[in-house]
Length: 210
Length: 378
Image 1 (tube, rainbow over the protein chains, first blue to last red):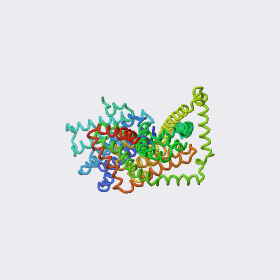
Image 2: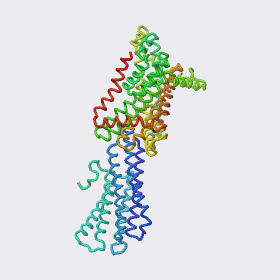
Image 3: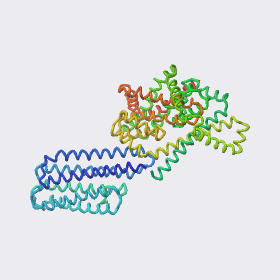
Image 4: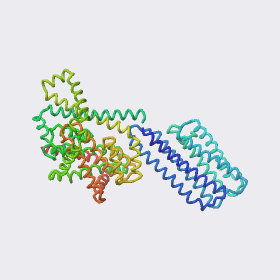
């Protein structure tokens, strides 16, 4: 079967993740640092568009691959590519949503939680890079570790959201902070979902809890 | 190159050789049959329209224009089928080959929009070939200008001393060696040997059937091995064609893919699901189809290397010039280019609503009309 063309799809997924990482960094720096939003806005939206275009390219290449290799098709693999590309594309979308929080003027540059936010930013950033390194499927245990780490991070973020919804914490921007955690939780969930697509049976992809 | 690719390449070369040997066997079988019988046999295609329809029918039945054209080259090369009779048959093969991708489009029948696009993608090839035959067939019939061009081309190639065309060329010697060995092998079977000595006509028919079977088998294997070998290049080419849209580049991609796999049906059938899914427009798929129409002519040229009579090369070149001219007439002008595309779209609009019409279309166009025509013209 056309392995090189599948390698090409892998390369495109990796490029999507590189772009996602970039858009994530930019958005988080706008929220947690002193980045001037006007200087990064165009680049951020252009990167998001590039991710979307790569997503479409992955789909197109899968159709061409299916048409050319119709007799020896690895359907589960193509389905996993389909779901992974969608998850990675969503990471970009949520990073854009993070930037939109910064656009409201509600930044988290001051306040006692800044250090924990920065730590969270770094951890999730590492998770994106980790996912990128797992794409070649060389080490399945790495993917399992990623899923475990991501799931635990997701639970922590859920707890933070619940605490805010139950007014257990008094903070400066409760709505923005809830959305901030919510978007980060979605980013982590999409990273975990993309990871499950790498190793889990087709019917189990995205259904880690069940 | 990995081991699998090396295996595919070796098999492709072997079966290509076997294909040329099969053409030689066919030539031998026809010569054994004798002029008296072959004249009778080909009387049915003495009417050019009947020849055209026979070409369509034969190609539909074997699902390969390459088998039909290669067989015709063998027949012409052995001197039993005149160019005059062979030309309409090759044109018919051009039309008949389009049935394969039309059948492929039925795989999309469950989804209306998808089927509409897929059916249009396949039938634009039908309409293109029909239009070209309508334009060039009568013109060539009365003026013989493509035939003259092919004859001049043959003379030119012979004058250049191109090795494959020389009667004593190593290629021809190799092919002769292979066919002689098969003939010896057949003669070692007592029943066949008895036939060859006492009932030469039955022996000749047996040879012809075996040769056509071998042509079919060898081409099938050439195509499947070349396809396996070229999978990545095909995908790469199609990805590039998708990125660039239509145009001359797409024609070139169509030529290269078909040339490398020796089958226009492979190229056009791959396009059907791609257009069906909507990622390639019918307009942009059209030039790839035209490229496939040009690329497929190489098989007949290869087959002509196996036969002694230069007329074999002439019919092969006629096929090349005919298909090149078709593209040259239809493609350059948007208004003309849109005719087959729009006809295909109109038909697919109807068939998407009433899908039984698609089945009727295939049965009537590729079976009933040619059959009826053959009966009427005889």
